[in-house]
Amino acid sequence: MAQAKSKSSVKVKVQKFGTALSGMIMPNIGAIIAWGLTAAFFMYPHGWFPNKEINNLVQPMLRYLLPLLIGYTGGRMVYEERGAVAGAIGTLGVIVGTDQPMFLGAMIMGPLSAWLLKKLDQVFQDKIKSGFEMIYNNFSLGILGMIAAIFAFFIIGPIMEVGSQWASAGVNAIIRVHLLPLANIIIEPAKVLFLNNAIGNGILVPLGIQQAAQVGKSVLFLMESNPGPGLGILLAFTLFGKGKSKSSAPGAAIIEFFGGVHEIYFPYVLMKPSLILAAIGGGVTGTFLFTTLGGGLKAAASPGSILAILLVSAKDAYFGNIVGVLGAAIVSFIIAAIILKNDKSTGDELEAKQAQMQAMKAQSKGQSMPEAEDAHESVKSYANVKKVIFACDAGMGSSAMGASLLRDKFKKAGIKVSVTNTAVRNLKDEDGLLVITQEELADRALQKTPHAMHVAVGNFLSSPKYDTIVASFKALTQVEDKPKAEEPAKKVGSLEGIDFSKVKEVDFIRHDQHLGTATMATSLFNDAMKKAGKTTPVKAVRINELTDDPSHLVIVTPAANKNLAVRYSDIQTLVVDDLLKDKKLGEAIQKLN
Image 1: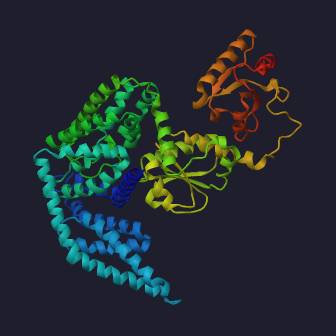
Image 2: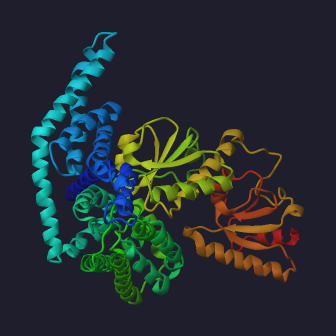
Image 3: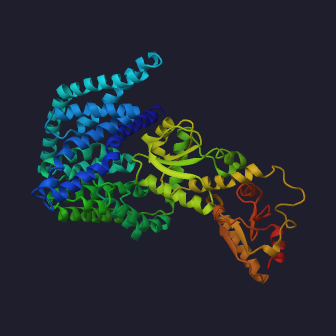
């Protein structure tokens, strides 16, 4: 147990460090793309449309704008606005102190300057007399910023210049001997463990920018963002998969390849861990083709979509980039197809594995998700929620799609609650907040927002917990407005309490635990209806698919009726002890149209 806890702790620490690095890059990806496109189109004389005047923007953006933005963002992560300003000042010192683009230096001086200011404020801020706060705030920031800039100029700058030269020389040497593809042996498994943003934006993008500044393009931008390996795996599921994993794969392939949301294929690999070989094979193949055929990007491709890759490809690199992506897809497809064709499982375990993983992780962390069967108490926990936030590592991609899915469910259910998305690092603790995050990030989200309600999911794009959340919100009015005691005048759940003239459909509730019983009950009841000459439709539906009106007669057990009562107020119910052979079933058939 201690060893497992230690491994989990190490993993969380690695994720936090990687997220801190990527957190300085991700908000500035747009600026990096702006620089890359300016260089690709107008750099003189190698751009698509060379222009000497516009070319004057390229070097200042690379040398000053991008590092200052990174330093500012890094400082803001540590100490909000005061830290952001201190980070920018400290970063300027490292910029001026070298002749190299100082992205790595900015990632050091930004947080370091802000941390020093934060410690200084902790010592002196409470001791400042009333009326002198502004003097202290301005001069403490100014003096510390000056010291940080001078320190960066004389110490950090020269160290980072030498380090950058060594790193660039090392990367170039690895590329020359064609060993760079071996890095994908580490990158692909790390991606599946949700370290993709940490590796891509925290490590590869800063190194890629420096390489692109020297030679005009970099293959490092493509190593994590290549959509080929994921596309091949999903296409293999489309052709050779089984059950739900096969039916969901085509849509996932479109989202992964064109939308650039790589997280969508991670659950497929986690479901069948041997598929990591397909991802590694595709990644190694893609990087080998990129380096061999002269591929490379001018700037980071974010998200990792084929469209983004084509937009920021270097002028002479389109062939290499396209062949590299397709080659990666083909190799990963072949390996995944072989694995899937020899697989003996049913293919319906995708959702089950996700649910099982969620439950196991929640238990190991002492967390739990209130289930709808907890009835009134579970619903009441949502009473104060005014806003729902999806939080992921980068605040883009999968969390945005998860927010969109839940927002659509809320709209259909008539729930008027705001649903947005952000990065975990940007969460702010406040009342009335429901935070939905991935299992891997649950601990960090809880640290950032201890007073919020938290729900952890395995996959933003497919989680049964969304239906529970919708049902709980929908049930609030039932819990708050309805009296707890049943009205004696109306025998709810009995034959006498049903207005059969309004019934247009008979429903049995199906859910994963009792799917077979509900299916058999529906079939038997439907056969009995036909023998009796009755035409009312009979269906097996999920509880959240019901329409809240009296035209639905729902046949349920007493336990299921408690769950139904907190969700719907107008549907009619018939409570039976046995869904297959209760005598009330025959009596209900006689009364139906």
